[in-house]
Image 1 (cartoon, rainbow, N blue to C red):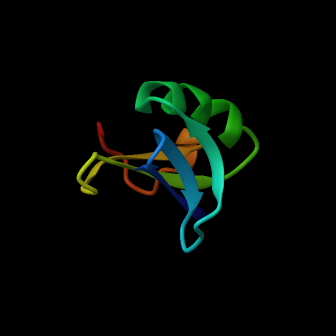
Image 2 (image 1 turned 120 degrees about the vertical axis):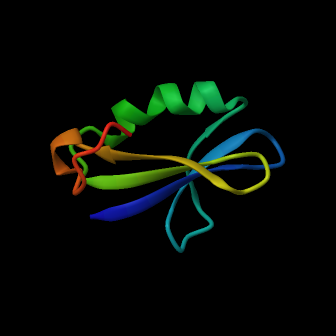
Length: 74
Protein backbone atom coordinates (compact mmCIF):
# COMPACT_ATOMS: atom_id res chain seq x y z
CA UNK A 1 0.00 0.00 0.00
CA UNK A 2 1.40 3.38 -1.00
CA UNK A 3 1.23 6.40 1.32
CA UNK A 4 0.24 9.87 0.13
CA UNK A 5 0.06 13.24 1.90
CA UNK A 6 -2.20 16.25 1.34
CA UNK A 7 -0.12 19.25 2.42
CA UNK A 8 -0.26 23.04 2.17
CA UNK A 9 1.97 24.77 -0.38
CA UNK A 10 2.84 28.35 -1.31
CA UNK A 11 0.04 28.41 -3.87
CA UNK A 12 -2.61 26.24 -2.17
CA UNK A 13 -2.63 22.50 -1.49
CA UNK A 14 -0.79 19.53 -3.00
CA UNK A 15 -0.86 15.75 -2.96
CA UNK A 16 2.53 14.03 -2.72
CA UNK A 17 3.58 10.40 -2.56
CA UNK A 18 5.41 9.78 0.70
CA UNK A 19 9.10 10.56 0.33
CA UNK A 20 8.62 12.66 -2.81
CA UNK A 21 8.45 16.43 -3.30
CA UNK A 22 6.75 16.03 -6.68
CA UNK A 23 3.12 17.22 -6.75
CA UNK A 24 0.68 14.62 -8.03
CA UNK A 25 -2.34 16.93 -7.66
CA UNK A 26 -2.62 20.63 -6.92
CA UNK A 27 -5.52 22.92 -6.04
CA UNK A 28 -5.98 26.40 -4.65
CA UNK A 29 -8.06 25.14 -1.71
CA UNK A 30 -7.99 22.04 0.44
CA UNK A 31 -11.66 21.32 -0.40
CA UNK A 32 -10.88 21.35 -4.14
CA UNK A 33 -7.98 18.95 -3.67
CA UNK A 34 -10.04 16.59 -1.51
CA UNK A 35 -12.74 16.58 -4.20
CA UNK A 36 -10.12 15.36 -6.72
CA UNK A 37 -8.88 12.52 -4.49
CA UNK A 38 -11.44 9.81 -5.34
CA UNK A 39 -10.75 10.15 -9.07
CA UNK A 40 -6.98 10.12 -8.57
CA UNK A 41 -7.13 7.12 -6.24
CA UNK A 42 -9.46 5.12 -8.50
CA UNK A 43 -7.61 1.90 -9.29
CA UNK A 44 -4.90 2.61 -6.70
CA UNK A 45 -4.47 1.15 -3.23
CA UNK A 46 -3.16 3.61 -0.73
CA UNK A 47 -3.43 5.63 2.43
CA UNK A 48 -3.89 9.41 2.22
CA UNK A 49 -2.88 11.45 5.24
CA UNK A 50 -4.54 14.87 5.23
CA UNK A 51 -2.58 17.57 7.05
CA UNK A 52 -3.66 20.87 8.60
CA UNK A 53 -2.11 24.19 7.61
CA UNK A 54 0.35 23.73 10.50
CA UNK A 55 1.45 20.29 9.32
CA UNK A 56 -0.43 18.10 11.81
CA UNK A 57 -2.26 15.04 10.46
CA UNK A 58 -5.98 15.61 10.91
CA UNK A 59 -7.40 12.66 8.96
CA UNK A 60 -6.37 9.50 7.17
CA UNK A 61 -8.32 7.91 4.32
CA UNK A 62 -7.73 4.48 2.80
CA UNK A 63 -8.49 3.74 -0.87
CA UNK A 64 -10.28 1.58 -1.69
CA UNK A 65 -12.22 1.61 1.56
CA UNK A 66 -12.20 -2.20 1.84
CA UNK A 67 -8.40 -2.06 2.18
CA UNK A 68 -8.64 -0.19 5.50
CA UNK A 69 -6.67 -2.34 7.96
CA UNK A 70 -8.66 -1.01 10.91
CA UNK A 71 -12.41 -1.36 10.97
CA UNK A 72 -13.15 1.94 12.64
CA UNK A 73 -15.63 4.77 12.23
CA UNK A 74 -12.79 7.13 11.21
